Length: 503
Ligand SMILES: NC(=O)c1ccc[n+]([C@@H]2O[C@H](COP(=O)([O-])OP(=O)(O)OC[C@H]3O[C@@H](n4cnc5c(N)ncnc54)[C@H](O)[C@@H]3O)[C@@H](O)[C@H]2O)c1
Image (cartoon, rainbow, N blue to C red):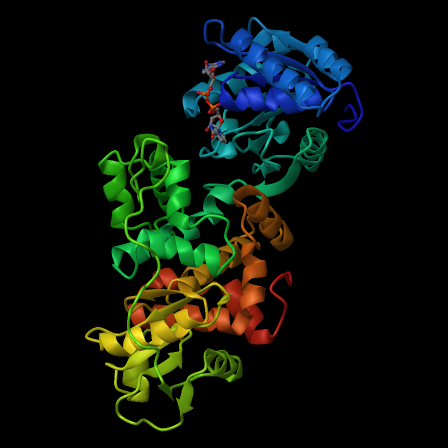
């Protein structure tokens, strides 16, 4: 087999659409020879022209030398049919997402290319096993799942089918690196790694919306300001498009035999059915103006004219919470005076469960989420029929310190805890079922979805026992198996091991 890193690799690309073009571009800038075939009339030529225009733009931006661009042009060839790919060392297929079409192409390629030519599919939703099942020599068949737009997205998932050889994985990994990507080897399973791992962030936000705990603006602001995510889940869903993420959610949910952890909620379907696909249609979780910017539909901030609380009755709080409260300048009472707001720091509990358990007056109970970054924004939460004056007095006290306040309805785990616990739990489950090595799961989720931390790192950051406690309480309070903790997390929390500890 040719040396994938430095040899004169000849890559075939089948399909010159959005993905095929991106793959061609990074293969050319990686120094390979590329032959492209597309069944559409003039499609290969159009695709090749677009790729060369993009490469010229790189020259204009000073990112690529003129000579290198000329060299790329010389290495790019059009193939009139699949047989034009006969001498290739590897072929990547990026045609329509249709199993029959892909199977036909793979069968056709097997009759054309040499026995040591690798054949990879860029499919995002079909199993490699299903594409490969009619093939004669299946050890050289794999997935090579790039992300859109390819030149900007560093990650590539190298999918190991049931028969894929170690040599094929090593070759495709080296090829991916040569294309300037970061390859991660993943299991052949629904959604592979990133499209599975990303389900928690979207579907838990939809669940919170469904329960009317908070508005899209509140959910997004908390995830950005308190949890370090670049985008909130609902603005992100609008950007990727509800027409994309709703079917992906359904397909992954069905692929895992309707595991409740992966279930999305009705608001997601409602948007999909209504054709409210997000930015592209001007309406989704938000409404968008002519300029494409969201129209403010209620602020995430709880603004009040109430006077800051003078006294606070202490419920259950720990040391860091005490210093947070002391920093607000309120006088903390250690007995209930019967009129001041009662503040408690909750982990995985809602106000109702807390009030029932500790027998405090639920009307004056104001819960604080201090589990996340509270330097910009603090989430407060109250029970049904709570005293608005108690809530507003606490909100005013926090606002006086320069922080924004998000006031939500009763919810086990507020927003930040249940969102992060679900992301972390799904990452743990991915490690448990062997989607990829634990460190690689984190790497892929950071690169593929721009998460500030990978899901296992997130569990470590929140603390394994706290993450487990959040999930167990969420499961107990809601009665929903959606929140059942992964055995991966349970075992490592129970044994006091680091989250990346292998089995
Ligand atoms: N677009 C994305 O965001 C994205 C991301 C990751 C993976 N993918 C996957 O990549 C693949 C391609 O997606 P895309 O967005 O580039 O699609 P696209 O519609 O932009 O391009 C597909 C191309 O395949 C060509 N084609 C169709 N049938 C063919 C055949 N029998 N032989 C040769 N060419 C044929 C079409 O003419 C078209 O040019 C799909 O499997 C998709 O699931 C897409």
